[in-house]
Amino acid sequence: MRSALEVADIFRRHGAAYREAHAGHLSRGQRRVIGAIETCRSAALGGHVEQCNGCGELRIAYNSCRNRHCPKCQGLARAQWLADRQSELLPVPYFHVVFTVPAPIAEIALHNKAVVYGILFTAAAETLRIIAADPRHLGAEIGLIAILHTWGQNLHHHPHVHCVVPGGGPSADRSRWIGCRPGFFLPVKVLSRLYRRLFLTRLQAAFEAGQLRFFGDLASLATPAAFAARLRPLRTIRWVVYAKRPFGGPEQVLDYLARYTHRVAIANSRLVGLTEGRVSFRWKDYRHHDKQKVMTLGADEFIRRFLLHVLPDGFHRIRHYGYLANGGRAAKLAHCRRLLAVPEPAPPAPAADYRERYQQLTGRSLDLCPCCGGRMIQIGVIPRASTFAAAAPWNTS
Image 1 (cartoon, rainbow, N blue to C red):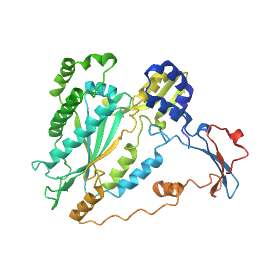
Image 2: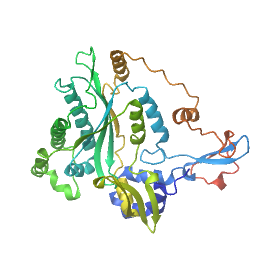
Image 3: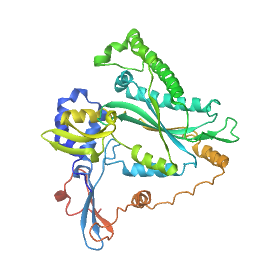
Image 4: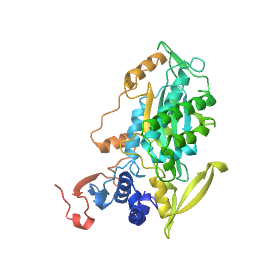
């Protein structure tokens, strides 16, 4: 069922004015996101016409934009990704560790997303793997899935990485499985100190290699002295790394991943209203015991905050490390299962087309008639940028 208000509605009503007012300050990616969400599942993208073979009900299905920042276009990608991960789950406890950055680093990241977000991923993964490999803590090779989020509940820029980590791994000689203690993975204070050092070392190296750019209020950081002064106090403060409540089992891991992996800055379900150019949405105030509140912003400010979270082209916001890394993952997981004495999972059943695959992954059918439960059959195609009237009689070629 369509949400009462969608991000697309806000962009359709106010996107053109925002583009005009901020023409010189929008990146190509941001302009593309606005255009994609505005046209998503509308006649502009074309689609097809279906008819029920039982009652004759007609239905128009417009194409999706498939942009990864669109709140409506993540369902199938999420379902497929989860199905792949389900076959990789191990019968061990799973832990959830979050790595954040101080506000001065977040400001630098906003000007240098690809570089600084990449450092955030690498520093977090290296920290977990180094501490886990230390015999004083675990003494094992671990694997992990890292997921980048760049927003807080109020849509401000707040980059952080969520890491989902199986509680154990092969020993250094790969001869046995070493599991963590019940309910405890790795000490967060130790993680925080190493993470801070690794991150700042890589950030300094990126600066010296000329990989960072600074504009506006941060323009002065382009000089080595100013940049060093910016980092100096960050070398002594505590960087927030926290371990969230451990997952109860593999099923809870999948439930979490289903909600977090393909999120965008705000879901349509959180939108409350759009009145006189002002957008209201629900948010959770973590500083006041997770109290649910409603925030109201001008449409211009809402769009500005939403666009803060547009990722660079080709940037991967979900990454895998250790024995879950893409290279050699199947062989490494097979070795882990042998150490744990558990069988290989059964391969997924093949699907004839995307509709059948969607039903396999989600349990929902795209073919059912909403009126009588009959089967919807495609009878025509709607070309891009056409309308319902212009498309009739239906093109069946």
